[in-house]
Length: 313
Image (cartoon, rainbow, N blue to C red; front, top):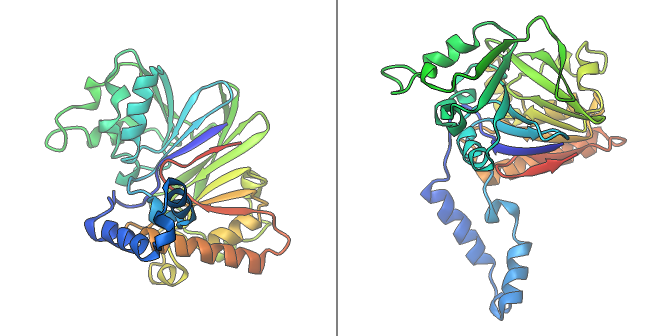
């Protein structure tokens, strides 16, 4: 199973701005010593020692994650602005069938569909999945005058909309798929994918409450033992208190939730658009400290979801 992040931000696209870029360059320059500039090898060693927050960026596109199963079947989780670049890659690869799972219809999770090149290819087959019967209606709303010059009806005719509300578990090309309702304004859904004994769960946009943290919650079997869990961790602890009922979680609750479900690898996701790379890196440090503090026996690993990062399980 191959997984790649194409969009990891919440709310709205957040490109790296001029001040943030200059800040990265300044921090790098301050670290340089004469011995780092002797030759190509010394320069390379210097670059390799730099923190990831200076040599890369978490990314500014909104939610989109690609998963390819062991049979090469293409699954796409959410269609935020990150799906645009994914579409460029898929068009070059000339893949013809895509399965797109939508967590919900807030704009940051569907805004990339009009810019997803494969939807305009008449030979492409696209399947949308969601536990509800208004998928086409909701997607059509953002692709009509005066908001967009091309309607959904002008896209590939091989577009199918699957209401999975009555089917909690089903199979697509050898991969077992199931869903779980999460706590978010207007509802949001997590999706589990099991392929060749490996379990991957995508669970964005949820506000974890105290009662959700217990190992006896009804959702525990859905999440238990996930090899990879992508989970909403939009806020710091302080900001989560300030934004109670906004529908997102703090990193510490995400850790508590995942430890109680024996998750193996947790990826903090749906980063706040106001957070810089440096702040997100500090959240990861705090999350790892917190995990060590509360989960002495846990073998879970914690990572930041960042654009371009890929995982193989």
